[in-house]
Amino acid sequence: MGLLDGKVAIVTGAGGGIGREHALALAAEGAKLLINDLGGTRDGSGVGSQRMADHVAEEIRAAGGEAAANYDSVATIAGGQNILKSALAAFGKVDILVNNAGILRDKTLSKMEEEQWDIVNAVHLKGTFCVTQPIFNHMRERGEGGVIINTSSTSGLEGNFGQCNYGAAKAGIWGFSRCLALEGKKSNIRVFVLAPVAHTRLTEDLPFFQTEETKARMDPKLVSPLVVFLASELAKDLTGRTFFVGGGTIAEMKMVRGEGATKKENGGLWTPREIAQSIDKILA
Ligand code: NAI
Image (cartoon, rainbow, N blue to C red):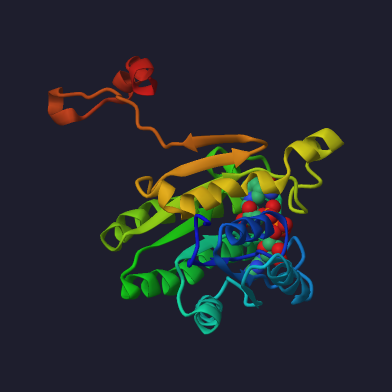
């Protein structure tokens, strides 16, 4: 008995890296998989190759699972609708969506060109919207709940030098997911956020990943058991939460509002100097 027997899952950008591991791990627990990947290069340029998605679907079938492939870009509404259509044609329903597709165009803000901002936001933030909307609506109409797992990053949630475009998109995905978790509650659609770290083609030139020891310790397959857990009934009471995962560590990440300081006098209107005087309490 697998944790996901009878379930149908879509993983976007599942032709390589972390997405491929998610797909293999979900399939190993009994889910039928739609493998989406447009087969691009790491920066989103270059000619798409259907081979990436096909190869992962073949791997799943060779291991005795069920899988189909789809090659649409996540970055348009038409693409999102086609991804849903492909899953319905192959398996008749969708229970689990993992939004994972991604690219990088790193540049410091002062040198960033409009195109570098636009394409990164189109694939990550708009892509998450474009794929999630049709599938969320399908889950609502079916009335049997569902799970949506969106991929953010510490680059957005904590910040990272040279990634204002990517960080903004990834923090946007977090905000999108927090809102959607509330909208999904009535229909038992659970929404989670992942902030993974792994050695993939996306991160291979970071100084952190230059030793063989670190590469092995940050194997992308270490990220995926958390996705299977979140997609299963084992996580049925955890909707809305965000998890850091990588290198054997799993930790909840939270946006925290401190107790702060409240002024009662003068209708609650602070003066800038009073704020300075209370700053220790405000920051605590
Ligand atoms: P990767 O480059 O190995 O995989 C991304 C996949 O998405 C590729 O197979 C690519 O062809 C596909 N893709 C790109 N644009 C697409 C589009 N428009 N439509 C459909 N597919 C598309 O990278 P990796 O590392 O596996 O990244 C997976 C996710 O994890 C991304 O969202 C990334 O931002 C996120 N992430 C990764 C981290 C890491 O340490 N590797 C750190 C934080 C977040």
